[in-house]
Each structure stands twice: as structure tokens, then as C-alpha cells.
Image (cartoon, rainbow over all chains, first blue to last red; front, side, top):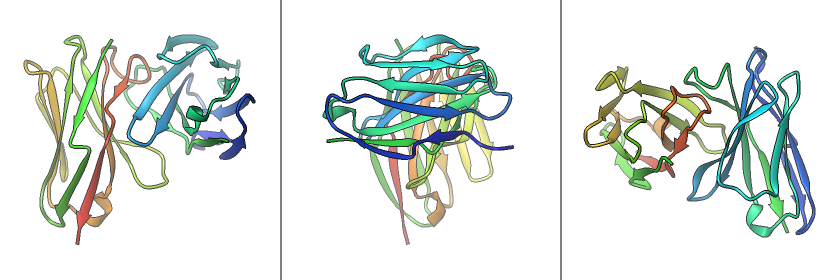
Length: 113
Length: 114
């Protein structure tokens, strides 16, 4: 069974630009969640989608948004990029969001110059 | 909301010794406590988890203990090996796990000295 796939793996943007990251969950998983990882801050929860609906949202500004498609693939978008948005963005999938284990992708490393 | 504190941020132990990482949580409704391991440059992976109806769980060299009264839980690794070097994250959830309400600690960088 293929794992969680995230694209692109690396990207460089400049302040003010916007970026879209993509996540393909494990086949059969309907829950997709997104995390921002920065040195010393651990994994900060952005949002979680289940069957195309956002079920939970973390404490991030409105510049961070996401969506989920009918095939469970998910995208997250960050608009008006700031230097502080530089981070590793991890996507995780699970069967329903309440089965216990999250399966993470390898992440998309965003650098904002 | 839930707040998870994790200590220490860095832990260095001699190969073969034991390592203990501690976490505290704030929400007494939390009932699921997983631990994830992230090796350098790799994705986090679940290594063990515990639910609030048990006090301890073991899996070979790793174990997790939970004290609901004190609202803290710990990861114990015995007979540490070089491959145990990684960042370990604890987490807490009040809805059974998965992505619903899962709050992570900031991580512990475990270094195994040869």
C-alpha cells in the first residue's frame, strides 16, 4: 500500500507570494491533517479534513487555508507569505481521524526569502 | 484547549543505558496519549500509545506509563541503541486519537552516545 505522498518536497518563495501544497493520503484514509514543523516548536496543528469538510482548525491566521477533494486528496494554501512561514509542512492521514495512528508524509519544506 | 509540556528538550545517554522522557497535559478529558519518533530527515512514526484505561504499556524495549491523577505520562526506553537517536514527540487527545484534537509536545532530541 502506498504511503502518504506530498508535493512538492522543496520550494522557495518570496515574501508576499502564495503557495499551494498537495497531499495524497493512503488509499482508504478519509482524514487528512496538516502540521507546521519548525525547530523548537514541535508539530503545530493547522487543520484537519474529513470527507471534504474541515473538522478542526488550529490557531493559525486566515492566510492558511485548505481543502479536501472527493478522492480524499488535500491541498493547503498559504497566501501573502511571510518570512516566519518558512517551515516543514507535514500532512498526515488516518482512516477516520479517531483510529489512533497518524501516517505522515515526508513533508514539503518551504523557504520564504 | 489542551496544552502539552515535554521535558527535557535534549537528552544524552550512554548506549545501553535507559532514557526517560516526560510529558504533562492540562485537559483532564484527554484519554489518548501517543508517542511519535522522528529520525533525522524522516517522517514522524508512531512507536507506542496508551489509552486512559490503562496505566502502563510495554513493547519490547519501550514502555509508556500514565498517571491520570497527576496528568503526566512518560516514555521509557531501556538498553538504548544507536538507532534510538531521534526526536521523540508526545501527544494528547480527548477524542480517541487520530487528528481530532491531537496536541503535540515540542519534542525531545535523544542522543545515544557510543
